Image (cartoon, rainbow, N blue to C red):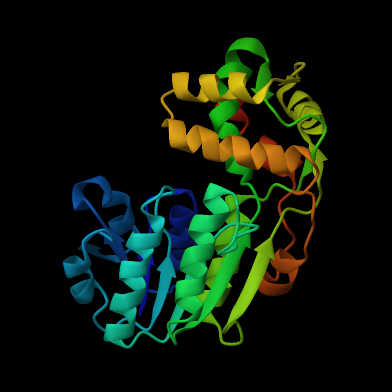
Length: 285
């Protein structure tokens, strides 16, 4: 039996769909059953619990052999995911698949890289077998630009001319599914990217082609980007963490392209053109 954490999120939700489509049964750990009714539609078992509350985890891990470990981003990741790792050891779990992030490192100077790197180190030192999934930035993150694309035919970020091998959440979930349901992925780290590295200007051109109107990318200074993110309701720490990533990506350090989706999930990776076509309604006027 597989336990899925983060089952109502972007990656977890896609993973639930793909496991259900293949007939694989799983259990989902949710904080509020009333907000996760869609999971029951797939025939999955649900159990209420919280990674921040260790006392809720032992029951959730009963009879579980494999775990998909994912929690909301933030300073609490190290403690919350560490709680799950300790509970998994107590429960005799065989394998943990952790959703991490590209560039994760216990010595990283980036907030997101350090948080995920600390958890990776704890998992690697735990004695449990593991698979670390390190995806690049998600294509689905562009939903955050939908309001300005719809209102102003433009999106704004401090990316300059940096290229980024953005990856579709559906492909990340496909790699996770393989790691959870097959042997041969033990103690491996997979850097998951899309099939091409694109600048934000090139992404704007792709949006233009799919939406049938001119979409522009407008480069802005990091402080202006931070103010915009916070004005949209984002916590200051998260806006700062994203600006750290933009600084790295704008310098060209997010352009690596790997074959993990082809080799592990055994499928062709989704292109940005396909993503924009599939979700065009989200960006139309």
